[in-house]
Image (cartoon, rainbow, N blue to C red; front, side, top):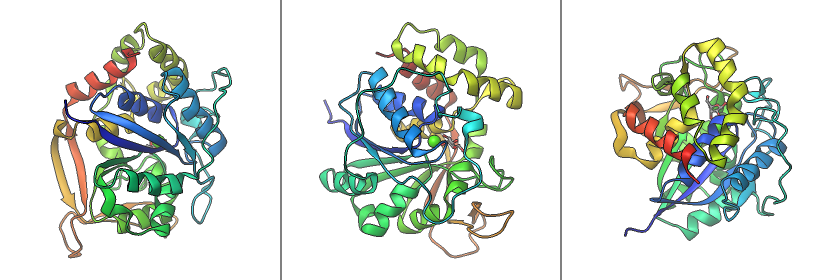
Length: 313
Ligand code: BDR
Ligand code: CA
C-alpha cells in the first residue's frame, strides 16, 4: 500500500470548512497532520474552538490544532461571515464545550515546522484568509520549496465576488496576506468562488446524506441548518460548499475536468476593487502562469466524497 500523503489544512471553521475537514479525515490516501487556524468567518476564539470540536466529534483528537493570527496582517475588515455561518461559526447550536486545548505553538510556526518534517511531500490546503501562511512566508520565504502541492480556496477569477461585487471572502478578508502568498508561491491550485457556484448540490440530496446514522452526519446536520436555510432563501435549490469543492480538488486532483493556468494578482486598493483577484486571461502582463484555476470538477465524484465523509465514522 502507498504511504498516505501528509496534509496540513489552514482553515477558519466555518460550516463549509467543517465539511472539507471531514472529507480529509475520511480519505485513506491522506494523513491530516495538523489544522492551523485563522480568523475569518468568525473570530479566532470561535474558529479554534470549532476545529477542536470537529476533531472530537470525528474521533480525531490525535490531530493537533494550532491557533494562528487573530486579525489580518494590516486592516481589520468591516464584515465577517457570521451572517452565513452563525455567530459562533458553527450555526449557534450551543454545542457541549470541548475539553482539549490548542497546541502552544503558533500556527505560522507550525506550518514552517511541518514543512520541514514533511519536506517535499506536504499537501497544504488553505480554506480561509491567508494570514497564517503569509506570516509563515515572511518568516521563511523558502517555505514553497518544501511544499509538494498548495491548494487554495479563494478569489473570483472573473470578478464575480461574493462579499463585494468584485471580491471573494477569503481574499477580501486579508488582501495583503493573499498578495504575499500569491507572490511568494511559484505555483498554486485555486478553487475560486466562481467554480463553487458551478458545483452546487441539491438541498434535498444533501438532506438525505445528512440522515446517515453517524455522529459526523448528526453533528453536521445540526451545525449546517442555519446556513442551509440562509442559502435556500438566497440562492434557491442548490447549496454551495466552497471549502468542500477545494478539498475534493485537493484530495482527488484527477477529478478536475477543466483547468486554466494563468497569471493572477490581488488588488489591495480601491473601495470597489480591494480583494479582487485580477486574472490575466489574455496573458498581457508577461507574468508567470502561476495559478492553476479549477473550472470544472466531476460533479458525481464531488458529491460522492461529501456523502461518504458524512456517513463515515
Ligand atoms: C469562503 O469564505 C468563507 O466564508 C467560507 O468558509 C469559504 O472558505 C467562500 O468565499
Ligand atoms: Ca473557510
